[in-house]
Image (cartoon, rainbow, N blue to C red; front, side, top):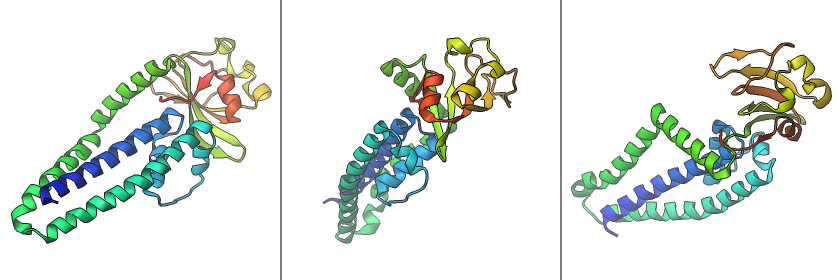
Length: 235
């Protein structure tokens, strides 16, 4: 194999590997995992490291996440073999060529990959693609106006989650927290309320939820979803 072809193939595989990692990170975010936890678990599964933390329970807690993890495991196994094969081909090509004559040419595809990585780390670029993906996901699923739930962590049998109120449930409109029955009837504790202006408040008995609020709550996960009419989707 020509060194240029080998180097280009290897660089392309690195780029595809990264793209797949990003896609599955987005998919896990789409089913309610925070970005950092989703990215770590995708990297762990895709590389086959078998690194296990308490966060792995979050991946296995719902059928859609288990299905995504299973697909990623199978893909990662096949893809890892392909990457190793391409890596070996690059070095075999290097051993049969004059390194000095081909070095700069072989660096071009790797420079292109580095450029893509660099652009992806720019915050404005990531925000732009997040907005595009979020809008597309909402339109595709038809859930753009539904309330969203983001799983943050499991503590014992309870769950910490963030609920985005795109619409305030009818029974909570104009009702303060003291009279909402969330704690007494549903055993849901509202810990923080983040408003649309990014102001974060510790809720009081007089707190009234408004459209656009993000609530950090603790309780049974299914009960939280049912109570706030929330679905897992990219938010």
